Image (tube, rainbow, N blue to C red; front, side):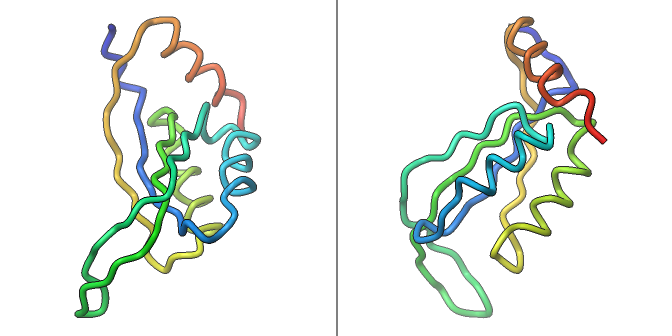
Length: 110
């Protein structure tokens, strides 16, 4: 595995009762993400507006590069149903060929 400082994963959640396909496909079509993994529904428990709540959500793992983060963030803010969507950026390392695939998949946008 190689550490390529350009690679990152972005985590966000999506309501389990809302279609997610157009949201994730839009990221890939716009070259904001090389791949988006959508997990099955699970429960999230969190504090919101002073109360503890639980909601059924899906976890999304977005594979991209640091160069695409600003455009990806703008897309998520504009298309996400939550007022404050989860946005966690994680540096990533991977094999040389997989890292190259991610970089190539998101290159050439804008």
